[in-house]
Image (cartoon, rainbow, N blue to C red):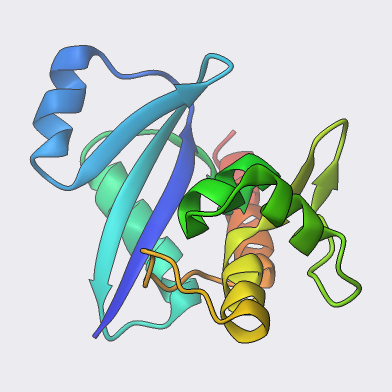
Length: 155
């Protein structure tokens, strides 16, 4: 059995009451820079890319409007926290020649968490608390393109 932890940007924030109701269904809400997000857990024998569609179907069935799927990106401080090392150690890792390239660099470098986790486990022998599987970045791109296309055809 596979376990996926998938994050989506919402078109609108939910109320505290809604968040409590949805929490009982395995949906967890947060916001960053006033942008609302929901995390949905999916488990089963499904492939990673299909897990995005399954989570989306479940969220939409509950009346939530999804803007896009968001890959799990981490900054150096988050890497340090997840592996229980200093920020300086994580910063040194990020400068290694074989370390995954950042996904977004706009003042802060961000990396795709599954690539970081794999590198640290293989190169440093450290494990994290996270044993989830994640879709590939290509899966996210295809899903978001499909979602965008569906939105355009509905307009």
